[in-house]
Length: 369
Ligand code: 5GP
Image 1 (cartoon, rainbow, N blue to C red):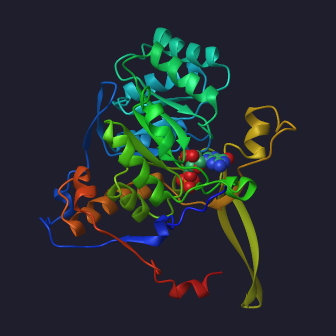
Image 2 (image 1 turned 135 degrees about the vertical axis):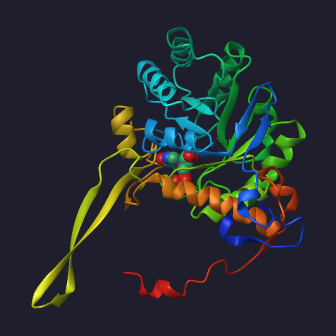
């Protein structure tokens, strides 16, 4: 019989982190934002557990470089060739940017081709010391995804492997036999249509709690992927025990994201000095990796057996990525001072989470144009 689970599943907008007395620090500067990650299959990496999404728009070299130079983690999308990635290695080395926290993404189509790509990177570009691999399937429940994961682990026993996406804890243990990090989140992404098209998805807060609990019991890690609207949501994910957080939309309007700035002109109803005012607004294109646009660009079209589970958006241009990266480090540090956490590692131990009906004061939204 079909069942409806009785408890409500919560999302970021349903909760807040409660400020409280603890070993509170006087300044955000005193908070340690770096964490040492010791992975299940060996290997240690150090950094702030924030990733850019492995999407064509934000999993590009320019965004990756910025996150890495801020001590965060980064992914490159799966459509770069070996030689393009090799050139990026050289550029980064010339700029003294460490690639220890860089994840190379592969898909789950054509297993041999994917493995070969990684082997070529190794033989041609000396990709050896910090091998981090992201295995990307929008739906990691398909058996082929597990086959790819097993093959990658066989071929790269000491690599740090992140695999996903999934949206239930029942699959975590099986994946963690081979993976180090499980990427959790289906249907939460800002350019995603999965919930509309399939009715499938799980709200992020409950998902993080459920998956972290299982993953941590066997020394695995999780990455909460999708649904970040504000920096506060990253803080919430970390407090809920996510080891890593991945975001796309919040980086997509920046100079460093792929694509040109698109200008749109609007004639305002007012007239100033007898003249109409034409207002310019600047946008950038952000598209889901399962959108029709991405399918046409990378997969030679949609194919008549599937429907688009992603959309193409024009989102406001936001300037240099440094501003949002500064907001992320500043926001996390400030969160730590509210809850008495001396380091990011301690956020989940220190946090008390409350369920709320009204997260934000929206008084000025009625004036939005
Ligand atoms: P955002 O930070 O924009 O809310 O979410 C980014 C995440 O959305 C990505 O890391 C990925 O997991 C997911 N995503 C990217 N493209 C698509 C798509 O076309 N369809 C779906 N369902 N999810 C997508």
